[in-house]
Image 1 (cartoon, helix red, strand yellow):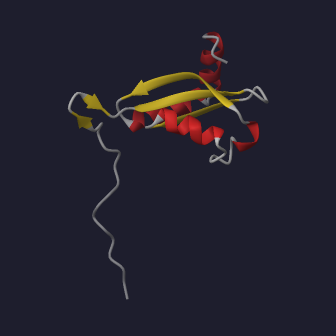
Image 2: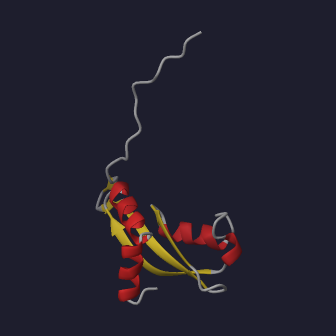
Length: 103
């Protein structure tokens, strides 16, 4: 039996606008209070995501808890946020964060 491919493709949705409130995406930088490490990520719900890091729900950050939010930027689309996250994880992005005295 052959399976048919669906013609539906996943795309990042435009920001959801509810009245005057629009859903945004965030790029954030966390600093570990125990090991002095930093972590860069993106999320739609920044407060909940930081709580997840501190509650050990993220495998990559679990062993360096507690985490403190030290920087965030807001974007209208997920693709913009991901692009900025990738930049912050590059050598140039790390240098920019250090020049701004964020890291």
